[in-house]
Structures are given as structure tokens and as C-alpha cells.
Length: 311
Image 1 (cartoon, rainbow, N blue to C red):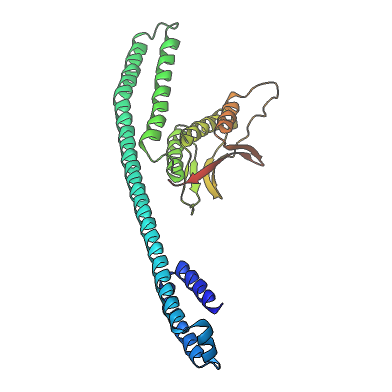
Image 2 (image 1 turned 120 degrees about the horizontal axis):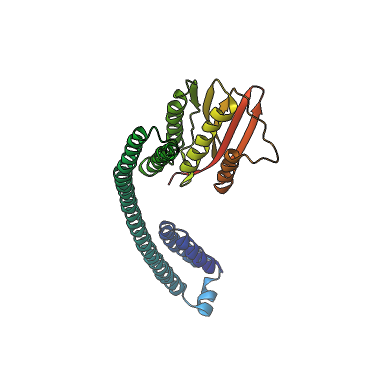
């Protein structure tokens, strides 16, 4: 019974750790030696020898079993460890290859984005500028033709609008547009240029975000369109004297807000407001949380945008 327990102890120690298994082999040999010593000094040994034989034989056999059994199990575990290490090395190699492939692909896509943006700007920008210049010259030559002037003015206006829209698209392609702070700086720059035309004070304030997260793809372009519409509505409807742009951070999202100190006209239920409707539709489509908050003095438009972890 004691010898069976020792063999079970040896097997458990080897499966737990080869180092412990080595210690268990030597401890088993010592225990077998101790049992043999106790057997030699036990009373009535002569009768036991006659009935069971010399105790030296079981000592040798159990010692051989312990050494063979322990060594065999240790070898099997060593072989399994080698196989696991090989598999892990292959997995690490595959992961490294995939990481390198993703890195190269990302660099290729970034290069393509820059090339597309540059080509689009050179070709389309030059063409739109040429159309605008030609339309202005045509407008000067046709000053006396009142029926033609509205058409020429429409051409100039549409050309400028298309050029402005293409600038937003190119910025989204060629810049770090998924960075919330980068987007805020772009909106701030646009607001300064836009409100300077109307001699209206414009300020901005951004809260420093601790979590390094990014916007979803194409979110920046839709946010730009929403706030351009909001900035235009301030001029058209609010009769404001000052405008502020803010950015605040929350868990898993970021909030952009445009606040003015004017008075917006109340929206009639039976009359659609296309500007607000467009902003709400874009927000729903992109999972933004859009709010129009009337203040005691002015109006605040808030846009809460979900963020995703950096990739």
C-alpha cells in the first residue's frame, strides 16, 4: 500500500513540474531504502523471508520502477513542452508576419490617400478656380444683361461651394481626421474665418481628453457638415453677437457644442426646417446624439459622438 502511494506521488509530482518530479524520484528511493531498513529490523523477519522471500528483491524492483517510470513520464512531458514551444514560436512568427503585412498595407493606404488628395486638389481645384475666374469675367462683361446675371452669379456661387466641400473631403483624406482634437482645431479654424466675414466674435475652448481614443471612419466629415450648417444658421436666424465652440470629453464619447447669445426663431410645427432636419438625419445615420438646447440667452447645439479604441 505504501509503495503504491509513493508511485502515485511520483506521477503527480512529475505532471506538476519536472523539477519536482526529479526531487520525487530521489525521495522515493530514500523512502524505499527506509522501508527496506525497517523491514530488516522488524521482529519475525525469518518467518517473513520464508513466506515472502528476501526483501532485497522488492527494493530493487521498486527502485527500478521509480527510476524508469519517473524518467519516462519526465521525457513525455519534456517532449510535450518542446511541441508547445514550437507551436508558440510558429504562432508568434505568424502574428509578426501579419503585423508586418498590416503595417505595410496601412502605409500603402496612407500613400494612396495622400496621392488621391494631391491629385484631386491639383486637378479639381485648378478647374474650379478657372471656372470661377471665367464666370467673374463673364459677369463683368454682361453687366447690362439682367436676365443673364443671376445665372452667372449662380455659377460662381456653386463653384465656390463645390470648392469648399472638396476642401473638407480632402482634409478628411489627407489628415489625421479620426483624432477628436485635430477635428476640433479644424472646426475652430473654419469658424474663425467664417465669422470674421460678419465681424462677429468667435471663441473656442477644448477640454483635454485623457483617454486616447479615435473617431469612427467618416465621422469627422459628417461632424464638419453638421457644424457648418449650425454656424450658417446662427448667421441666418439667431441675430447673435457672439459664438463659442466647445469640446468636452466623457467616457467612451466626445461632445462638440456650438453656443450663441442670439434668439432663434421658433420652429413652426407645420413648416419644415431643412437645416435642423439635415443635422438630425446625419446624426441618426452616424449614431450621434444631437441636441438643440434653448438657453436663457441664446441657443446651444450639442453633438455627442461615440469613440472607439485606437487601432
